[in-house]
Length: 410
Image (cartoon, rainbow, N blue to C red; front, side, top):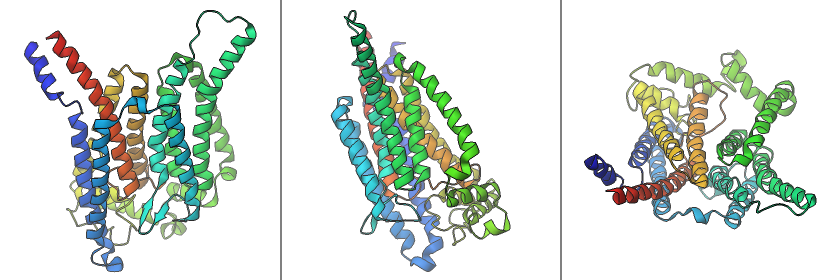
């Protein structure tokens, strides 16, 4: 028993979770290789150096992201997340999201253009909202402590009203406003829905007893909203969004095949051609302009076409390891703020995996969401590595504390 404890202590010595780092390494390597392979299809129109350029660019993003990840793993502290820092992050996020209105890309205002580089603020806002809500939904509530009895009923009413405003209404307003900016200003429904889903999961995961009744109310409100949206969907959604749903439901409709469902149809062909073993690395057919920008959101289809089930496993298993390990630590750690952060980051990876692969396979409507650490893109790659760095800092602190307890017992 003592030897087993010592062996476990040895592997926890540095604190950070090694399976998570290994899974990140696999996804990064898969991404760089497959971005190069998927980009080959466009060399005839974009130049012979297009594939190499994309691989080098992605490698630079990875290098920047890994550096930030390692800094955060060593230096991030929970005490950094307070009211002042939370509001600073939120205001900067909203300003940068609104700033995208000066640039239009593919019909939306989701990117800030800096020369040949682009920044997608919504990707960083997803992580920002996880941190903000980890404070708002835990420490704000714990600050309202009842000491003795209230002198008057008026003071009691004022206390609970103030608590409701700061613990429930204010965080909810932050979520709704950020979602509204994403939908109305940026016209980026996909990223906005993921942002809203992450916020929803963070709210539902807070362990504070105060929120139990409000969680039930949120479920009821969500159910009512879905029902109402079902009846008013044609009035709420814009024309291009309705067309996207129609092309998803009827991808083989003649007028859709060569228009709105072109990418989806060719993505399905890629999945069909890939079969079990794939066509072999570099042998994709659909990347030759059948799937435009194949190295971005539809890279999952190219990976499956070339590598088959093995390629699918390389996308799903490492991401599943990251999600499972984060949830495992969230279950073990007693600190409420840490739990919300780990669950929020796990939901971030889970939602991106589900929405991306669901979209390229026709399971759900395509919303232009990247496959984290695999799809080409600096914002999503760096944001994902920032999230991992924050999670590893929390995990490292927990493991070191457990190690100290084990050493004391020995």
